[in-house]
Amino acid sequence: QKEVEQDPGPLSVPEGAIVSLNCTYSNSAFQYFMWYRQYSRKGPELLMYTYSSGNKEDGRFTAQVDKSSKYISLFIRDSQPSDSATYLCAMSPPSGNTPLVFGKGTRLSVIA
Amino acid sequence: DVKVTQSSRYLVKRTGEKVFLECVQDMDHENMFWYRQDPGLGLRLIYFSYDVKMKEKGDIPEGYSVSREKKERFSLILESASTNQTSMYLCASIDTGGYSPLHFGNGTRLTVT
Image (cartoon, rainbow over the protein chains, first blue to last red):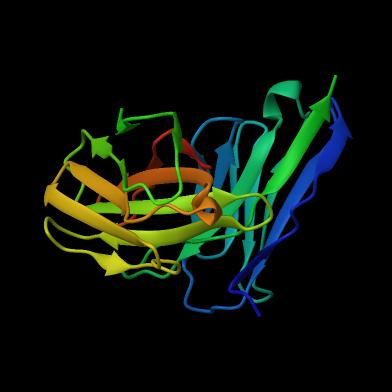
């Protein structure tokens, strides 16, 4: 079983839809949970991060962590064509010098 | 803003050539990383470094080496390029102490013919 599983998609939705992107993980030591967004021909950029369980909201984006189920989600409300990108989940334990573990990424297309 | 700069956006090399991919960051970060990204395989860690002249193998180090002579510069070396090393290569850096995000460069698309 891989440490982090993420559905690669592709996912295609109409503009204005609510998008749900998900990752599952197996390592209960993970404490930091991140979502990166990668536009075509660019490097990934941090979109949101959360520490431990709970929800975090930033504009149209909500990150959710359920440590009991080892499941994290990113919700995008009122999706826009500019949200079309690959979304990668990433996570790490609390120790500072351990590389992040990434999901394989989900490619999202929002159609106008 | 943190800037991670990779010297080339696109490179085409021949099989057997020695290839150098250069990466420079401007925020005095201790930790630097090299990944490759392939469709269906996601990001895979090749090597990383926590300090000058220090290196650690990642998940797929075979066929690669690295050099970190100065804190801001981390080079990836393909000793003898092969066609299966055709890929997108991404460099990243991160600060230490508490949580901080990983900052990526825009990648080098390497084609080995």
